[in-house]
Image 1 (cartoon, rainbow, N blue to C red):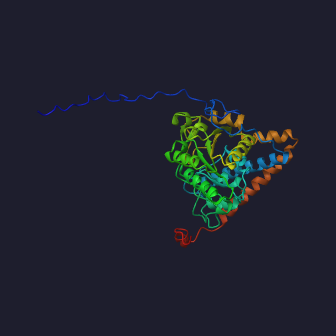
Image 2: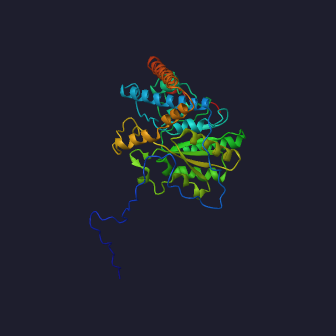
Length: 375
């Protein structure tokens, strides 16, 4: 006897099978001291608690110059994009300057490597790469650091141990683990600093990289630049665990939450993380609580947040203004800071002029650098 077929009763249209329970929203703007951090899992070794870096007056001035260079460079890039000199995608680093400057100031440029995503101009500038060749790359010129073929998202410089610039969200993290494997395999003493954002922190390949890095105790620092928004979605709406420094706990990777608007806190955290990794203890995660002032890219009007929110962060936590106040407390006069501003604007304007005046790549360049010819 044939069995009766059982049918599932249809639910009324619009019924949620798994109703979403909204979390109480957390404040999206970073604070001077990160809040909401829960105590770490006990009985696991952790790095020492980072201390803010004690910078000399000269070091503070250097931090100020580097952050101001990134700010003015990115503002100029935004202008050139609006004028049509820069095509394709363009993601600006305005507001996040303290992260790249603070972290990379602690690296050893002779042996350490850096890899990041598509918001990469600031990281290259913080590594001391000539603004002219970066701007030329943005405008697709032959004199660009990647011959004008990488553009905003895919520029790199193996000479400076800067490995991109990657357009696929989170893809650079597994490559960062590979760079760390190279450092360990060759015994060169280097560390890879692999940057990614709060949105990329939800990508599956990131966790594959975490597992491999801890399993093999690779010398890699995973830097989560939590600028509060993954494109247009705030981190507390997109992530079930929005304390991102805890993302490595199931892999036994320690994490540290850092005020990413304070360059001295960033430098201090970098030194702590580097000491841990160089001691052969494996990877560490740094969650940098920062904030981007502009949209996700130049095509993003950022209507998902209010102007008041952005202005409140500028007024309270701007990384450049913070260092400026420290310099003034050290006795640096306003005239000296104005001179620095003029010097930086001159550097940026010269970079823009260079980019506009140099030629585009020859059509024959389409066929170069496509395949590896020698090993």
